[in-house]
Image (cartoon, rainbow, N blue to C red; front, side):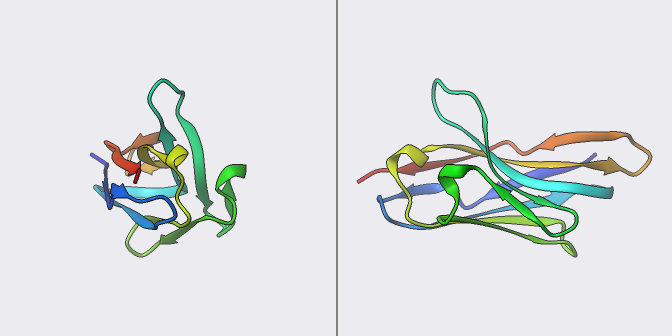
Length: 120
């Protein structure tokens, strides 16, 4: 059974920084993408950033220049460095993995989410 666990959420002041990490456990055979999504109260879940298997990355427009996604393939871990945080970045941040477990089919896996609150 593949599981994703996020770490690093919390309360930060506007303009501050946080780093989220997401560790995987279980037998993942192939990973295509790892990324981060977020969901604010009353809003739909949205893409934050994604790391593709070839090494390229994609960001939502509002995160470009402030957030950086990185990935440790040896550890099947993905990170999100968030700088210049704004109150509107407040949300639950979810780790996502798209891949195939040993003996399984391609599917999306999700972490349980970690709360990020940006407030003075």
